[in-house]
Length: 398
Image 1 (cartoon, rainbow, N blue to C red):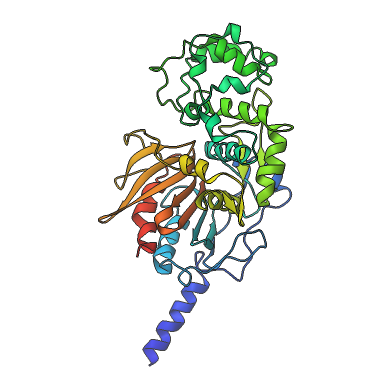
Image 2 (image 1 turned 120 degrees about the vertical axis):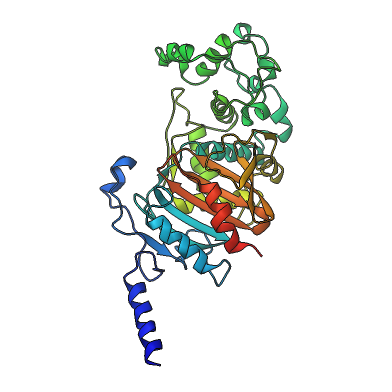
């Protein structure tokens, strides 16, 4: 009896002094007013990790639960969290898990703060895709419009100056990184010397005047290549007001996302491929919208058919260079600005769709398990998809 009492006291002492123990009675770290004005790279690191296996209901529209009670193996996740807190898996800033529609786990490290929008890099592309879907839901475009020439929506252009084949560029092609533009680095640098000529649809005019001819052969998968810009140009052209207003009022605003940044690019439109920033909890909202086939709190914000295409493997991109991958990640593909891959644990393989940003921003959806993982980081060498397959899947597999 004496030995058992001593062991219990020792365990309580360890938990009391652990930086990774459940902290549901503590407040999540928040950026001060002064910190909120700093560039993200200048945000000071937290002195210790904040871990919450029973996240608070912050009245922000995200249902909450408790890890281990509402799903998941708590011990397995906390073991992983110890390693993350010890910087064994890269420079994490946040790590959240939602299961069966509830946020069960929330943690912050390094520069992570619950109220601080995190730079999203290329995860922004997935949000641009959802934004286009919102325009379709409201009737400014149709699903059939995805296969029409993209230039047919841009009325300020002069088609007489276009290179051959521009009619082959559709929204579908652009959304899958297959627009087919042939613009050299030297041409891009030359364009930038006269930014005034690139305002509004001027950017598209310049691209379509100077590209190599667009052909079926040129329309292969080429990441970036102005494809996101082309999609944002269509959004701005078809919605009332500006794309910036549309983001605020009809997209983010509909989900209560107000603490965000979305900078513009040379055309003065919101940058479609990067330069947005949202909080980790708001990433959960965006992931929930996709997981629920375009519904938010019962309202269809994005057509189900559009979501299905967005997170489906429209094309296979190869497994040689899977961002965040590893030996248990395979069959990498691409939908509408969303990546996808198979994640394997043991003999079981699960299809995943993910928004991904360089440096380590992820919204990973595993529909079969009704599971979402949100990660923010500032480490380009991360292996988050492999970590999900190896360490997170077994905590939720049946």
